Image (cartoon, rainbow, N blue to C red):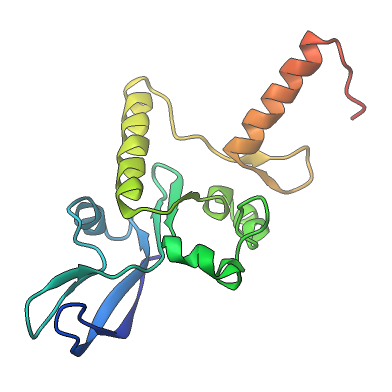
Length: 179
């Protein structure tokens, strides 16, 4: 879902207060125009109504593309200065609500690619779109999450790769699993 909120901000040029809309979460399937706005550098921009100065509003932003099955989370670097602002994340970089997303079959949302630079977010979006188009032209679909050993949870693409690597290592060294 696309989520936005209004905030009182000061223009960094003239210092005058005004209300600005800050996008917090973008779902490209629901509103594709936000993709172009992001690429054009037109997301979370303040255009001062008094002096016409333009400035980026440095706030977290989640970009979600359900069709291509990826998420990327922009976090302002200043958030690392306050450890409490990272409360939604576990020590392995996942969102604490990952289990909820897994139950819905969209576990990848709980494991967004995290970037600390808005330009890097744009580059990552373009990279993932290129990969999607490449695979689509070869007749492949975006990876789907699958149940993990019948436990009722959903396996993320990262977990699938880890499992494949573990299986390869077991095979190479003739190690048998005790499952």
